[in-house]
Image: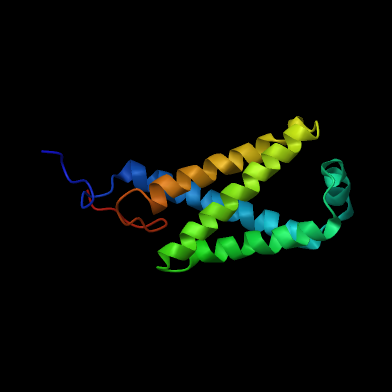
Amino acid sequence: MPRDTSTAPVSRRANLIASLSTATLLLLMTLSGALYLVSPPPLLRALEPLGYPAYFLRLLGIAKLLGVVALLAPGRPLLKEWAYAGFTFDLLAALASHLVTGTASHAPPALFALVLVLTSYRFAHRGGARVELFGRVTP
């Protein structure tokens, strides 16, 4: 008979991965969202080859910051699902935009962030057990 792992205690390793990936993701998206809201001229120039209008950065910045708030909100699993989905769509679109416009050398940060999203989702949100950011785990 298959073992039920839904009530199994979370390992220290899984909790560490969940905490670090989620904290890094939250920090990265907060900084990125704030930077997009401010839209400094060097950032606007760097994104010109992608062909997006300047106001689009502000919309993305707001969306990223709302996603961060959603992941930090206690409970609200459906809201967290939407935040993870939004981050995934944003980063896949960023990767595609860089690849299509010939600016693939700028794609690694988006790829790194996408790995963080997937890791955080797997370990902190869908790992099967409740994991609190930097929470204590009983052995």
